[in-house]
Image (tube, rainbow, N blue to C red; front, side, top):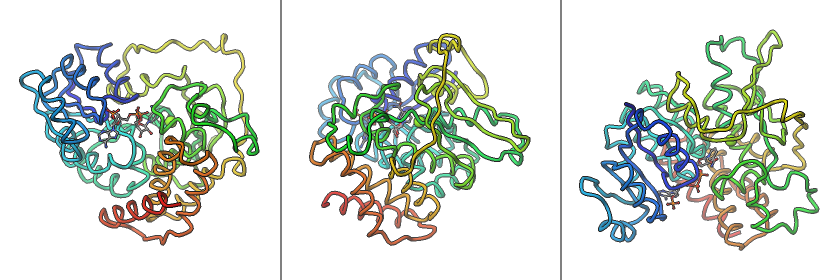
Length: 379
Ligand code: NDP
Ligand code: MG
């Protein structure tokens, strides 16, 4: 029996993680669940999975939830609550699926608690990758990627000599606006942006896919997960999202991982690694797919991806600033305060004002995160 805790259980990745649990109820026991403000769903999940600890976003929400929890479930809230669910249960694996760099403290707490990490929350690696990876190495904790591209790469590298790896290519669907010109992007709405052609995901990552920030975050995530230089990490437009990513070796061989787009496959793989089990996903028929398409990535069309590479190569706090600026800009776009193209302007302005600090500690990262957010909110 594998004991798991889920941070962000009420979100897109969180609920799909529970789908995987439902598919194999004999294999998994849910020890902890943490959500933000969707208390109805959290109560429902708590009644169904009977975790020992649950957490909600705030004290007010905790007061609202308390009367409905089954006996034997302890209730927490806020950042401390996330940490409690991450590190304070008997779980051996913690799925990190909250949205944004708010997940950093709890991810580190889970690592310090010796938990294996199923990592969906890429913003933690973008914001503080060197600290997270060093902490995991020191603790002997594995970080198993849930992001579909990184899971693909992880699978392609199984049993291979890493020294023979020449590079990896992360595929990108192109998001909701992949067929629009920059001119056409001026007038797009929040509703248009939220219509992703291939994946059903939380709203922040759906916008990140449209701006290509998501691919930028994934390039930085890959740098930390696989210890690669940025010039070894490529991005390729692949509208069908069938090839989830691929790796290339020094003998020119390319190994790719394919499947229908369904996050429950990489989620389950992270939970059952190195084993594989039947999954709730639909089998892929290449004959039915017929054709797969690929296009070179255009850095002029997608300046956010270019900025992500630049920040990654710069290192230090640059990626922290990039991530923080984007989180605020996307939240403002979702509130309809700014236009779609303003997201990239805000990121560019925050990066222009940013003073990079090498090898930042957690305090420095928190300071950079807060300053970047403040500036991004005021622009
Ligand atoms: P959602 O917005 O669907 O879910 C986010 C979850 O985090 C919800 O459970 C939400 O709670 C919770 N949450 C948000 N803020 C807080 C907070 N301050 N305290 C506690 N809980 C909080 O996002 P996704 O599931 O789409 O994405 C989660 C992460 O996974 C992101 O980092 C994303 O980049 C990554 N990811 C997602 C993929 C996907 O297919 N969705 C694919 C690959 C990576 P509530 O809803 O109750 O407020
Ligand atoms: Mg992805």
